[in-house]
Length: 414
Ligand SMILES: Cc1cc2nc3c(=O)[nH]c(=O)nc-3n(C[C@H](O)[C@H](O)[C@H](O)COP(=O)(O)OP(=O)(O)OC[C@H]3O[C@@H](n4cnc5c(N)ncnc54)[C@H](O)[C@@H]3O)c2cc1C
Image 1 (tube, rainbow, N blue to C red):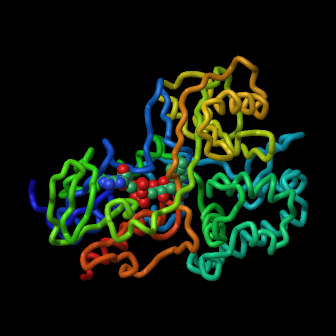
Image 2: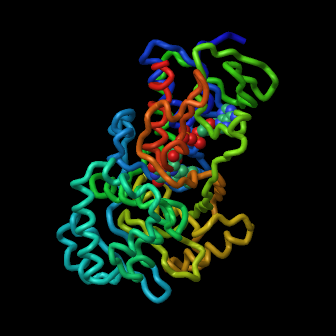
Image 3: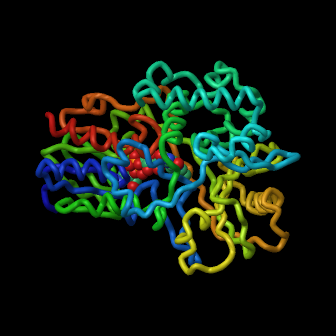
């Protein structure tokens, strides 16, 4: 095997950006990836003529690092509408974002999502965060729990149950809202300033576009790394590769760096189901938020309304993505979730066909405190070994991209 100067381990968003930065500085790194393709947690499968992302996720168009590394136009982004449909045990109703859709102001004021006072507080919060920098969104809130922050702002239980728990619970992948309020403020600001979108080619179009920017990096898939010692990387098959220029570990490092074995990354998981309905379900590109405590479902949406290309063959009917409240391993959840989906969507009984299920045990790192950025020396674990990955900062695509850049900058500076 050749002796590359620099090795990057892990070809997720963080590893790909690290490679982009190293190439800019004139290096030709070797990028080692355990699985069959680049992308990490950003993967899309084509199943029975549908594009299925491995776990429901969206791209927020205002993420600073997204705008630094991605050509959003080339991704042909398809956006969700702001607002949503809320499903409680007794009723379901739509609410709109009056800042985005002023024509909906009366509907918004009257909607049962929260009290009038909640809506005023929501609008005030949106305005306040819009005028703050992202650093300010994080400062002082890195360890405060989101739920405590919401109570401190005086929001009612009604809006917490009907909006904040399903909506932010769907983003944080935990409905208790124990995720630091810094993340809530950051994400709230991002939603206020931009859109939630899906690339026409599925979420995997993101890492594909990053990889297409690489010209001199050698990407080796199906090459898991077993261990790193000094500047030697040992592969799972026992081969050793030396990287005198340094190593960027862009995956959870504890399995391959013995000195970090005692501090494993903790993870939040999620279960995502896909159904095909032979009827067209009209949701107007809105997300459905389920606050009914008897339902297994947290959110669902009609993907092909947002991004018609998710139905590759442009067949009729609807492609529905369902995210469950909790990660559920048991087999029986599919039938139960189908019943819940029929109830919330009011589709006729025989109209749904189960397509696929994704249990993503390592979806988001469980972190407290979280950070927006750090000094590159912060992710240096040895002379020429740097760490990257969202687990270094916060659980978001923005953090993954930023951590890859910072690790490369760190390595280039020693
Ligand atoms: C279901 C779900 C929903 C999400 N929703 C959102 C969202 O709406 N908005 C948002 O901003 N973010 C969201 N995220 C988070 C976002 O996808 C991640 O932050 C980002 O993709 C992480 O990139 P990464 O490079 O840090 O890690 P990863 O993508 O995990 O990449 C790590 C790579 O390292 C490889 N690897 C691991 N071990 C080894 C080894 N020993 N040797 C070689 N290679 C190895 C892995 O195979 C993988 O390819 C979501 C994630 C999931 C799963």
